[in-house]
Image 1 (cartoon, helix red, strand yellow):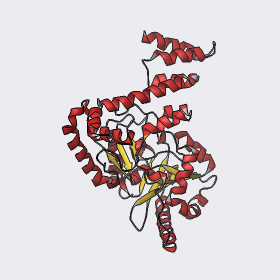
Image 2 (image 1 turned 90 degrees about the vertical axis):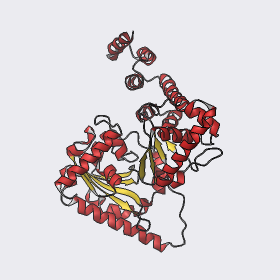
Image 3 (image 1 turned 30 degrees about the horizontal axis):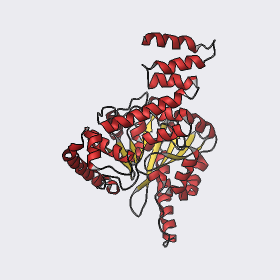
Image 4 (image 1 turned 135 degrees about the vertical axis):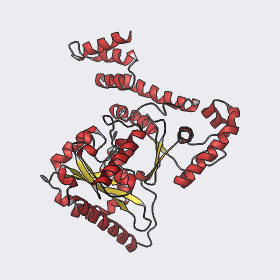
Length: 396
């Protein structure tokens, strides 16, 4: 990692980025992991799957039971795809959702070796209290990004997590050597199959827009992250939501509340196009109607998909707050109300008192109905009843 001064500066700058994203040390969490079917799809489509034998030979084989080491392989946007190693430690790591399918990008959990290594595109070691999230500060970790030697694109990250040995003098050279071996192996495999055409990008590389609980949306695409202005976040959210496209008049109505505001919305779309052409050319919006050339997944649709599958606990965990909370654009307010309404309705129908209490505490503290419903569902002698009654009386 270089000098102590450089290391401290690296950590301080990472913490500053986390605070700029309005993360809080006691709430910075990776969210709900991908379900098993989607995780398998992501794994199959990811280039590092072809190098797993090399990774397991050089890293995982030495991380057997009693080693005190967890080995993780992640994609270019910080999602963990494989987590293996000391089985007792792997189980302990599950407590902070350091599991396959979880998002450990810096924009989600703050400072950590895998997320910060990807954010900086360099090897990183993070020891104990240098982690931004409180729940991770008992751990230490070293991570190294992996690149495609043909394009120099970042395709993933290798990480070792555990106790102090995870940032010991041997950890970083071992990871760097493994990353180099993986890069050479992938290049060799590619050269041995020159006629093979590249398939579609894996699910792990799909553009993703995070807007829940954020005034400035974060767009993850091609291994990079772009923080959008409030207006650009509104426009991109509306285009991602209305996948078939929007006329200039309809977009003006959804953003400004007036169909005749096209003279304002058109230059705003030009500026958004310029921003995306510089950072993600494949996402630059098309016109007549305004639409995105490829689908952009959003954390909003993820929540709704979980509700549709009946995964109410997962949906509540994934709901990080209102859609673009500071926005007053009518179209954003419509999306915001739809998500809030569907989440509330699903949980009221779930007949799960624990879920209702969590929802009331985190999402709707001034709404009495979830508390009343939980009170009706709990057994007469439940110790939780007194607390619910007190909360209801406080709302009167």
